[in-house]
Image 1 (cartoon, each protein chain N blue to C red):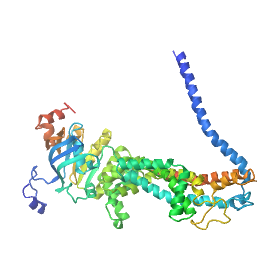
Image 2: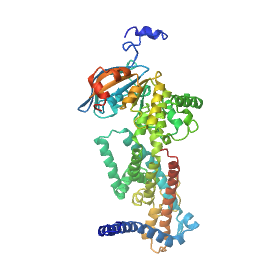
Image 3: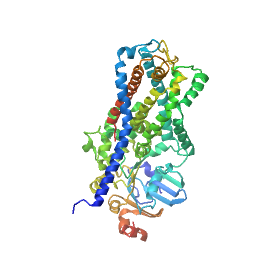
Image 4: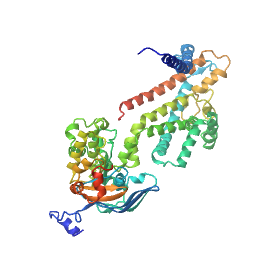
Length: 289
Length: 275
């Protein structure tokens, strides 16, 4: 009665084929990440030292450290966050909580999604025209960060909007029916429950901002500067551009140095991300439904 | 409507208690309502009395929930809703210009089918409406403690949750959640409580407990309750309104409706010939 039939065998074989297929696809996906990380650690690891992290580049960047670039990237990311997070979150709140669902808001949403698809070199040229020239910020951290902010705004807006929409409508109904205004509802109930999703958007933004090269090339990042930036109106070095420079532009570069720079760049993204991941986990622990 | 003014001036006077002279909580005049092309309410004229429980009964789709939702103007949030006629609550037209919608929502509390406590602590749930409607400068922690205790006592929940006021309200059983949803309306001292099948998500024991609580609130508040449950309407209301296809068929004392209804449609419905 319980013996395996031919049909059972056929289904079982097919089951195995699909299992292996999907598993292989997943492995193919993970493999490049592992190869990249292992290569970076193996080749770049020996370069990392205190002098490398906190020293100035010397000998036409073929020796010494990368501190100006490291600090520059941190500056660029932080200023970009400062600009894009308030703007993006506010816009998402308006679109999700206040705006009526009509053709106009749908058009705005479409525009935001399209903005995410604009190549970064186009953002770079926009930043050059708008911030550097038109607003007269010159090539500076501020201009570069604003360019990065514009580029990553869609990520923040979309992530925030999705986080807001994941908050059950019944919570809003309950508030409105007690005579709460939209704002009271948002800041007492909706935002506290959406904050983890907002942070996810911020994490994505940090990763992308730290790694971008094109948008900062024309707007604020320099190949080489003999001093650290004193304010947001100065130019700065940046890790991503530095990596490009040491990999391709300087003859006689020690082979391992670019790997070291790349490793530091990934490390910085990881550290910044883990800060917001830790914050997100802390807030999720306090999550209330 | 005789001697309305003089009655108010002498609160001790035990005036006529027949339908004509009892003060009215909700009065509708020629109320019609459309969802787009579909007409959901037809010439509804009702005088729902103060301080008692009035049940709205009728088969699904008869307009009872629509009527309920018109009384605190939630229906406005739905696109394509059009209303004619007037609704007065405590003798004031709630659709008049100059009416503050936030006051309407404060004075007319609403309880839903599914309990919808906010994802915050029990204490914060009870205080939510109060904090919204009280100027920040006058909020006092000691007042809040008293308010929480009083509201939870009124809904017969205090003894069960007094040691867990800081726990999330969403972790309570459905019955307690629903009681909490009623409790959080009370600190702002509403005049009218609207309840949309408040027991339909509860088990029989929970239903009994919430019914008991609603009966406790009788007298302090004017309560309008939509129900599908004939037994509940019979047990837990003073007057009954029977609706069919958007029209009010009969509005009378509950005792009378369930024993000797005036209209054959009412009798058919009560006896379960359609539902």
